[in-house]
Length: 214
Image 1 (cartoon, rainbow, N blue to C red):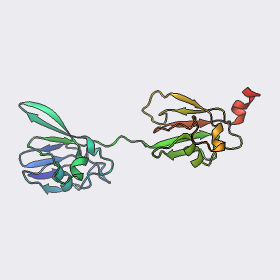
Image 2: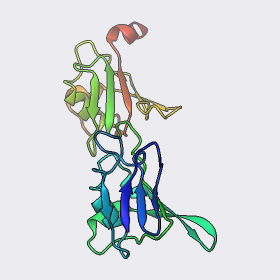
Image 3: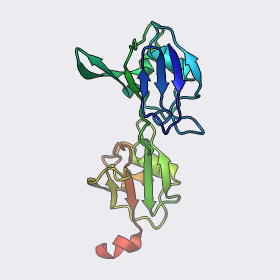
């Protein structure tokens, strides 16, 4: 069989016909054409080869490809069915593959945009910014990484908005915490909560809350 990669205006998927595989430019990503494989060309594939060969001949998958969510659509017993294929496992394990047959449609989507390991720190902290969320990070870890609280930070109250940094999250829970233990480096404090991806942390100045406690 032969792999023929067509212009993006013609096709949307990969179609495996009797002698031809047509690879869409719309579903694969290349640096200059926004498709998740590395290159486009006219390539040959043996009759008994499958997904691993297809990816290899196409130049591999880019980091933006959702390789674990590859979809193979095919006709079986006069009805169309979908088979989910983990291309990551196929590429990593030597004896793993998935056979492809005439008429198959293969789809690989792009990973949804947006950072999945970030924390946003706002308000009365030395360096408010967006920070990397590392495994096991807690509230005090991120605040210390941001240079710590300032002399003007109002310690008795801060807020964590769960998942608020994710634009697809329409509703976020608000968690109220007390930062008083951060100045004595009490990392076992009840308020030193474990952080989650896309949390937004809001610290306040004494001027914003101080007058309420005078």
